[in-house]
Amino acid sequence: MVVENSNQCLCHRYAFSLSKAGRDEDLSKNFQYAIQCIAPDEFDKMHKFRYKEDTLASLVGRLFLRQVAKKMTGCSWDKIKFSRTDRGKPYLSSPPNTTFGMNISHQGDYVAFASSCTPNVGVDCMRLDIKRNNKTADEYITSMAKAASVEELKVMRGQPTDAMKMTTFYRFWCLKEAVLKATGQGIINNLDSIDFRVDPSERYRHGAFIKSTTVKIDDRKAYNWMFEESFIDQHHSVAVCYDSSPPSKCKFHQNDEAKIFFSKVDLDWLLQDATIINPLDDGGKQEYVEFMSKPKKTF
Picture (cartoon, rainbow, N blue to C red):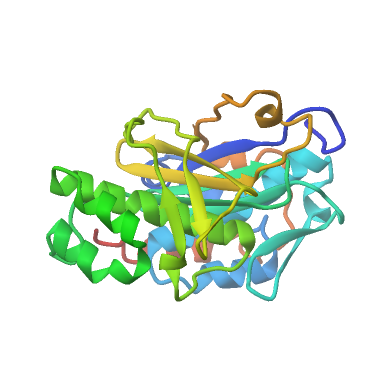
């Protein structure tokens, strides 16, 4: 157990594969138990999703927050409570006055989780689709041009292949989402006001871990944010944004070159020491039947 007031770093990076979970022979048992281990309002939100992947991603996201909060505070599963800011960002309200931050993201095959020794953290992952809406890379980038700065568009369009152009688009999109989630703002209309600068000498590809990226917000360099860019697998990129002044116990404070890649976890890990807080009369059997009958997304 790693409790918050210890001298251990609280920065963690985890990823959960939805497709792998769907092939797990224990899915039925774990799903039925898991849906009883989240709060009633979280269960209601999960239940309303149309697609199977979104339903499972919603469940996994709630389990991530509760499981890591339990590990980092030493608080029992049933005593942990979450609230939301007026902009909808979840935060840990019980136990109160914690100093670490947590955030989740879902896109493609993964739910990504990041925590930080600092209160503000944002994570975003993207599936690297080569085409979107049956458009070429140039056509798609042009259709999304309002979301990018002049310099970002130049970097995207300057890539030698369509695949690299789209990957660069997703790179900038991940970064923008991550910083907005760290601030708690959510999506804004003027995304072009968030202007990222990337180092062309650092190759952005599976296996990379990039910390040199900087950002200007409203034409002013934002020194209060740090960024990590990496990949969950060869088809999914991920970005993490967090406060640039971590406490002394943080491994990023101790070593500027520290790297934390995303570790993959499963439902067994998410349900360690989990207890039922939302008991269902049939133990979750009907909900599992409905879950399995939901359509899958077509990518």
